[in-house]
Image (tube, rainbow, N blue to C red; front, top):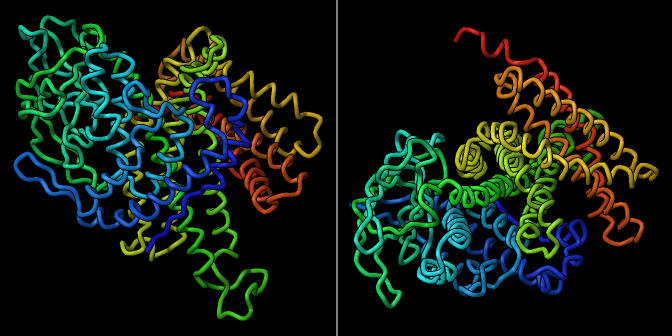
Length: 592
């Protein structure tokens, strides 16, 4: 049976030592972000995830969902678990107090999201998507629509979903056919079909709010003619309660490789009454608000899977006796040494730890930057933070999901044949993690977004939000002898990233296939260097804390992992640079 224990100590380290949230007391919502409040909150969230959600994970995977005539029944225990989630006030954590929220910053919500995804990814999709829908409505809907939908969504009594994909329109949303015809009362009758709608039908909430991309009559072709509409499973009465069914129907659910307890629905809109969100033909702008938040959340899904996979791989490696260490018996009183003495097992475990702890720091920093972009009183700080988020969202989504899948796969490898067997639990993590690399924009699409949209903005303005702080950090520590093993490789590989960036920019102007053909490798190279920056900064904090003489085991582990990352993972950038600069000729001219 698998196990899970929330990494509370690491959350505390990142929030209060690495990110030092105490410096933002002047920013709206951060007054109560100190450890005296957050430690009990983290512990309460951990208890819910460990004791309520995690025990349902394997059961949900095995039992799956039931579909009958438009209705989806969740596995036993899920409805009760969602009730506990709502009663704990978790859906309202970062929402606006005007609609019943607690108003806390997003950076404090990320640990909860990670813990939920580690404990039970299938469960976590419903509240995660609802939070994304909340963000889109909050930023783009009229006050009237906010008052109508948000209080029940914030409380968790209603959930929200995004309805983009159609059978003929996946990544290319310009091909959607769903249409919205004006009604006399100012609403719209929506007709069409959507597929792959996560949590599009379930019994966890009394109503489901749908954000729908559709076309108005006479709309321009392509993405310029897409508008965003809001509708719900049940019409809403004047008193705010639910009324009759609206004409939104689930026509079936998909039978999938993983996330078996999350309904992936085929939805038809049969003249349901919807309302325009934002301006006509500006639906893509509003939807990208939701998708950008969702992409960070999907990245955290990968991280969550990676963390629980690492924990189980580590526990098994310590317990499983198999062969003797090649340098001689380490446990002579036992018939064999545990797996953890073997070099390749240690390589895999340290790769997993370097990913999970580095990715966690990066995810929380991204959430913090998002908070600063919306809440900080200084316009210059807001702009820098937004540039950072815009630049690195595709990098974070792809790196965390690629890494989550790889970490789950490594857990299976550590278990050997037992890892391939269902009862041990780790094979489920591989299946569940695989979808994260696909939905909310495949990782290949993220790479094209990075090189095609993000790099050119303001002749590299977004890039400065990463390179300038990194250069400043290097300059601050260049004379610190204890930091040289981290600073020197960081500076060297930032140079490789700059070289790759220049090549992509210049060569892409001559031959777009060169930029597109190297985009995925460039995105990976960027991620490796970004994580080197994260690990160097964690090492700096750890060295300072070790000098203070407290919690030495924790901080020494940080240094050990940072050292492993710099020596064993970061050098991958060299081969990635070689592949990028080889160009696209062999790629595009090969016969297939």
